[in-house]
Length: 174
Image: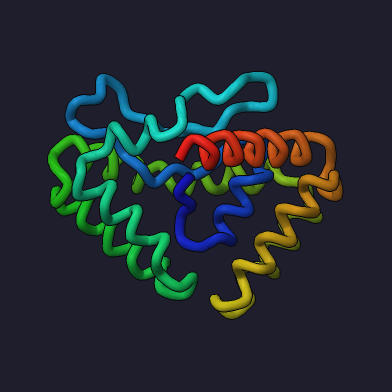
C-alpha cells in the first residue's frame, strides 16, 4: 500500500475511520477510477493485492514504487512531482483527469477525515507532523501500534487490525 506524503499520512490512514487517502489513479484500461481501496470495518478488502498497481499506467506505477527507496524526508517532494506530472498529463489523459478531480476533492476529504478521528488521535497526528522527517517513520509506527492496542477506541483498533491483516496477506503473496 502506498502512502501519501510520508508515513505520518499513512498512520492517519491506518486508523482514520476506515479511509485511506489514495494517490493512485487507474490506467486507461480501467472502467472506473479507484479512489479508496481500504475496507470499512464491516467488509473485506474489495481489491486483490496488487490490483491497484495493475490498473496504473506503467510510468506512474514505476514512479510510485521508486518512493519506497527514498528517505522519508525525500518522499514528500517526490510525491509532489508525481502529482504535478499527473496533473500535467505526463501519465496519460485518464490519469490527468483523475488527478484533477482528486486535487479538487482533497481539501474537503481531509476535513471530513479529521472530523471522524478521535480527539487524542488528531492531537497525536498533529504532533507527528511537527517532528523532523527522519523521526516521523518511527513515531508513525508507534502511533499505529497504539491504534492496534485500542488506545484510540474500538473503531480505530478494528481498522488498524484489518489494514495490518491485509498488509500481511499481500506481503506473503509478493
